[in-house]
Amino acid sequence: MKKVCLVILSLLIFQINADNKKEQPIPENQFGIQFSVEKGGGSSFGLCWYKPCFEMGVFTSITWDNAILKNERYVPGVFIGYRTKITPTTYFALGVEYITIFGKIAGTKIDYYHIGSPYLSIEKYLFGNNCMILAWVNPYKFSLYKLHGSGRILKNEVLATGLAFNYMF
Image (tube, rainbow, N blue to C red; front, side, top):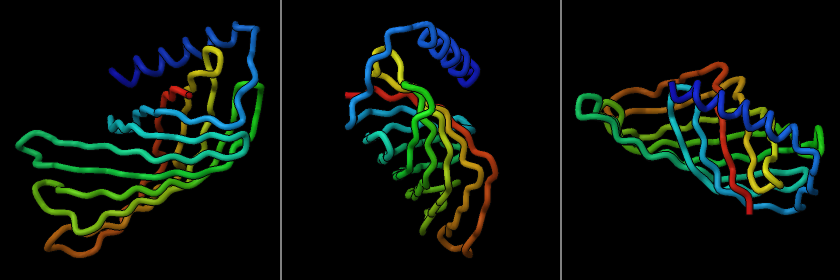
């Protein structure tokens, strides 16, 4: 339900901003605070740096599930990519993302957990270019991890998606 509400809100914001005829130039160098929601209900927050042809950021997520699942995870990550302008306030970006996970899964300690993936995104500036909403897709995610007392595991995921909101300063 949260995802449906977020998608509807995103579409409304895109439409409201499309009606705004007074477009201001986007600054050459912007920093932002990002909040994102991804497929499966995960969420994260982070800091981002945007230039006309470049973007990078760091983000994190901390998860404590209920006592039955016994999941405790700290999930830091980084992304870096290339951007190109589509319209005066819309950008297309592609890049790579790296995530690592620390903690426990089902009560078992994580020895190591690494995730790498390419991403594609559409980024739209809103409200005088102080805010940005973006949608991204990871066409393929490659995961390598080992839980304490078990063997190494390779896992692949196809088509992970997400939405993010940035406040720019």
